Length: 171
Image (tube, rainbow, N blue to C red; front, side):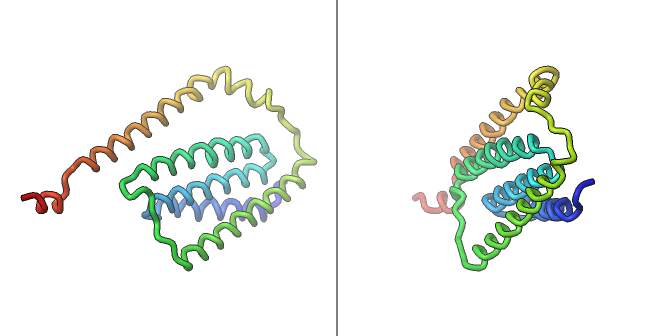
């Protein structure tokens, strides 16, 4: 049976950061909330003794996808620039401490639950991924590429439009 406290902590963090992804307005904050959500899901996988899923979640979503989103945010007209203030930095520190506490409880729970579980090898997990799931796995790359191209096209279109200030300044 799973220890209840780490699962509840990880689920609460996942719910709060998921709400942050939806509710926050600034793109950089949304990307950070998405990173927190991804890491809290990885901690939840770890608490459930799914170490391979936790590692994949961390590497693929926390590493690659969030970095990709941050690169796209950097291409925005504002460049993703944010003003920093002490209250915002303190809130970020509180979120970081909560995320680390959730990860620590997940690691402890994983160590306790690992003794009672069967361990899957990478070969057992990878065989279906490169057999019957190969097509959906490979189709994610063009999907992400299309999203990047669309974001850059929208940014270029917005950048090339003359604003009301530009029209008023011309003689």
